[in-house]
Length: 279
Ligand code: SF4
Ligand code: SF4
Ligand code: SF4
Image (cartoon, rainbow, N blue to C red; front, side):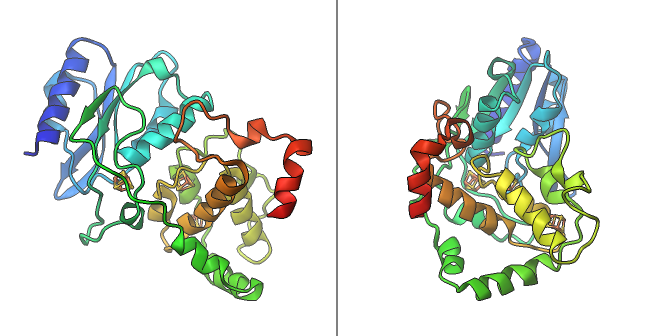
């Protein structure tokens, strides 16, 4: 057992025994497959694991906690950004959450392949935590080469690229349902006035562009949408393009600094219109 796993179990046990939390959201493993788990009894902490299979961003489950629940949660660097953003957007009460932060070495899929998000991870150490497990480590330099590759295409080429991707979409909404920052109780994607049930152009574009724009300034690039997509649409590339634009226009990176005001809140048409025209 790794030191991280050992210390994680000890911390979770203490939290539950001292009744500082009602339950801990973490990971368990069964038949070689890791899945999220909810531990509400100190005697069950031995179920908790942390290993390269722990890919899920558990912060999405914070949205289901009752306002009076105190919750412990295991969070990697990328997951912590979602927690920061959820706190800023008044979806999570900071005092109700105990963050068991993990200094992360990356996660792998079932075939043992690194996830793309880990190849250029800027924040392996959580940006918010109550206890940190593992040694602090340096993140990588920002690398938008995947987005720049698409930006360098002509308009026609880009349209062809995304048409080819979107025509695979079965509108299952797994990408929306797994996203911690897609928390609206009423979603435009369920409203037939915005999006019909058709899988054809232009509805399919409408559906994807609505979601992309609604994640502007909120997406923390955790890659869960792309992982959940059953037809392998490279959604993270699309949302990273929006994230890159938001950064260039408003100097804002979602989930990085709890003090930064989200651009959609701080936007001032008179002040910001020149900047937008130039881009
Ligand atoms: S993106 Fe970073 S923090 Fe997230 S799983 Fe990969 S290496 Fe860990
Ligand atoms: S849009 Fe995708 S990458 Fe962005 S926060 Fe949601 S699940 Fe994560
Ligand atoms: S998960 Fe994939 S197939 Fe399902 S709605 Fe999202 S993009 Fe379409």
